[in-house]
Length: 454
Ligand SMILES: Nc1nc2c(ncn2[C@@H]2O[C@H](COP(=O)(O)OP(=O)(O)OP(=O)(O)O)[C@@H](O)[C@H]2O)c(=O)[nH]1
Ligand SMILES: [Mg+2]
Image (cartoon, rainbow, N blue to C red; front, side, top):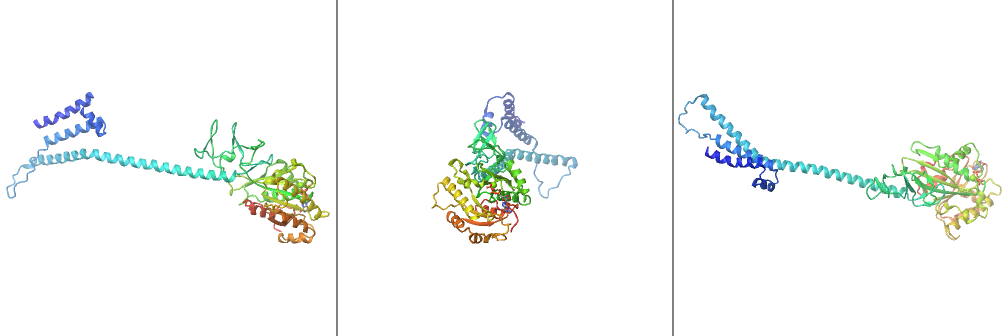
């Protein structure tokens, strides 16, 4: 009893401290151990109560009888009490052991749970940053590849990138922000800025020069200059290529193809009806074909720059110069072999063309032009020197039918010259020349120009 009373003193002290919130040793101990004050108080009290209980009740005679000594019969009730006492003692010892190791187990368990949680958080953060980095890289790549050249369909001038209109703000060359792939900070607002594949190409774009709003969807341009004498078949050649391409939509070809200008839509149906109006000389008329395919992230645009043949014969002035001569990807020079005095007419047109081309590019006659040129002989459906001649034989046929000087001049001026013959009134008739020019200029569009092979 005395021991029990002495053992109760710290317990009572604990209860006193707990109840009356006395600042004392226990509180300091709890902060030192990093445990809650209440937890320590309750834990300590329980620990002491259990200790006292074990001292009071667990006074069991564990002594075994001497071997050989008679075992007295004490009856069933006499045996029950020591068995119960032993069970109680075992239970109390287990409880004591549990309370002793519990804080340790709790600490280890909590540390493990925390580590697992942190691991998940770190893994999720790492995955987020890796994904973000990949998207941003792909966005940067798309931006670099698809918007590195912008040709304004309205003024015909070329710029590095279009401007983007974000509500009232015009952002020159919108690109992924340093903050991530989805945000672009303007002076006034933050906008989503996805890659070209999704959001960005749909943001309204405009020309940095003439400020015209353009529906080009970051359209990657491929520019072809079409030159040749009056009535040689330039416009027919352009619509033959356009018609052949538009007629082959679907499957693995373009998923959509359209003409940028509404007037070209009616001109195409006129061409399909077998009529072709002479093109105005003063007009900078590029037929713009826009198409999309699952192969490309953004829209592709083929600018077929066509002008009335009289332009190449007249004197012309500085302001008449076609701006695309400075940046065109390829040239098609069209020859009509059925015209009156065809070689002279074609050569005259060629002189006029070269004079303007070299003037605009400030190139004297000694400099070779690196842009590839295709010499396209039209009217191959008519009886004559080119009827039924395969493309490989066209150069020889030209040399043999009075075009020797023209061929010679062209091969001196240009480093890459190829020859084709076609029926330009037929859709797809121009496709062989288009495919070749697209292929050698690396446009990636060659498969989209389909048509009958002769
Ligand atoms: N049979 C035949 N007719 C053609 C061919 N190419 C053009 N034509 C015809 O020749 C005429 C003039 O063709 P265009 O395509 O307008 O010639 P162009 O060079 O654009 O003429 P301009 O714009 O005035 O310089 C049209 O009536 C066409 O139908 C061809 O390959 N075969
Ligand atoms: Mg024309």
